[in-house]
Image (cartoon, rainbow, N blue to C red; front, top):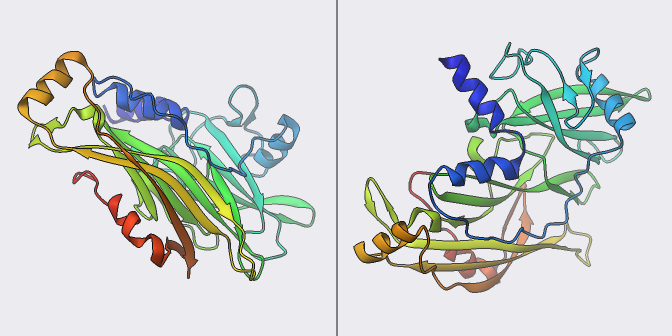
Length: 299
C-alpha cells in the first residue's frame, strides 16, 4: 500500500501547474480563471547538450534525455522515496554566484522522489571545479523551479522564488528567499515565505468544520527595482485581495452551480526591502502587507 501511495504522489509531481490543477480539481469546484503571475524568472532549461553535462555530474551513466530530462532508475538514497523505480526530472536550471562572489554555481531544480509534504522534489547544487561541474548537495523541499537572482553588497547572489501549492479548494501563491549557502525548505515543506496570497474561493466557504469567509487573493506582478546606493533591489508586489462573508444560502448556491459570487477585490502595491537574510515589508507598506496575512487555519 505504501508503494502505491508513493507512486500516486510521484505522478502528481510532473509540473507545478499540473499539480495545482489536479489538486484543485479534486475539490470538486470550478476554475477561478486566474491569470498567471508576472515574475522575472532567471530559471531556464538549457539546450539538451548542456543539460546532459550537468546531469552527468548528478547521476553518471543514468542520464535520460527526451520530453523530461533527468536521472533514470531508482531514487537516490538521500531522497524520501529512496529505492523507488522512477525518473528524477529536471524542472529548471539557475546559474549564479551562490557560494561566493567568484564561484560558478548552478541550482538544479528536480521533480520526483519526494512526497507532497516536500513539494514533490528538491534542488541539487552544482559548482564548477577545475573546469568540471561537481555536485555538492541535494536538499528536499527546496523549490528553485521559478526564481530571480538578487546580488548582495558583496556580489554573492541569493534567489527570490515564487511557488504555488494547494488542495481541497485552497490555493497559496508565495514568495520566499533561498540562500543556497544555507538553504531552507519552503512552501509545503517549510513556511519561510515572506509574502503569500491565499485564495479559498473554490471551497464555497464551507468545510466539515463549518462555514468561513471567502477570501480571493492573487499576485499579479512582481518587480525588482535596483537601489541607487548599491543595496540589494527592493521588491514591489502588485496583488489584489477581497473577502466576503458566507451564509447557508450562498454556500448552497455556490455548491449547486459549482460557482458563486466572488468577493470584490482591491488592488494593492507593496514594497519589500532586504533586511538581514530575508525580505520584509517597507515601513510604508506594513499596513497593506498585513491585509494578506489572513489564511486558512489548516496551513
